[in-house]
Length: 472
Image (cartoon, rainbow, N blue to C red; front, side):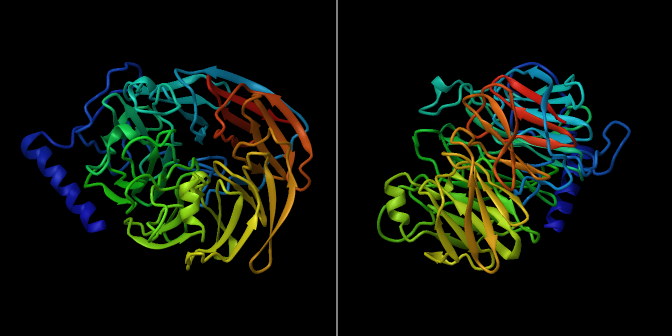
């Protein structure tokens, strides 16, 4: 891979010197809704310059969905609240489905208006806004439930390049991967995120992006309604925007979306774990749908798991892919989906069909879970559920939150934060007992919305923008 990157960089430099074409650097930022062409590939400098300096991640930063590649969503030294108070509220150019990020005192927010914003963490003042295209009206798509459809998946920040990466759906329709300078909002990388085997109009990019070393990983599912000829797909791009896209696509006739909002989880060796939804196959040989897959950093299939009843799950739209995998201590993986069954898997041997280490009736779950020590917090549709990991391979049911508190949770100190998305209320729950510590109105949000925690501030994306809440 390093040799490929070196050759790609030399080729790009040669083209620049000889023909002054090829790796064109985009400097556009700020407003404007005209979609730019997706063919150019742009690259940031490989070393910091006076105009593009890196912002390194620190202990209060939140650079990816649920803070780390394991998707744990945990901050150990955060204060436990007695009160929650709104600090500021900012209306943006579209709904916020993605989890906000925090980097260097900036809150980074992606909208369905195809814009990325950097907001001052303390005041909410807009430091920069970059619009990367015109979002797609739902009326022009064969199905779906987001209108308009712009940036849905949570971006990821790369401290090595100082770029925030996001995938935007733009009119065409098409999906583009952009890398935006965290300090200035300038677009440094812009390239197509579609592969020839994909039909862009029926693929939706809802899953959070993931980063491993110099690669950005992007997963695709279908639109709400499962229309068209879509296939679960993962693509990978070098962070400098050069070279071909790597890809893995489910070997299924149709469907098998990789759509859970937590996105791919990545272990310490760079192996990638994704949860896969239902497929069209309902009999015969298993086609890797309704599953958890383990992919190599170069997107080669390494291992897989599916429930014994995968065919019935497929037939009943009861897929395992509604919640993303959570990587646990002791080399375990936790998976949960629409059937209500929770699975513990061995990461080094997922086990194939029926190869789980443990299965337990838990709940129907959507989104991303959180982890604090030996406590798992699952986004159940009938209220957040605490699970307790025991020694060996053991899982016990703990407390359950009220049924309206159901969005993907995070944990700070001994407090679980989750939303009642319809009621527009943020809840702070005692992580040991489930008792309500505090609540605050933040506004209606997507059922998949997940808060972000940095210092004594919680940030929540809503249908109208983002809200900052202080802990006291």
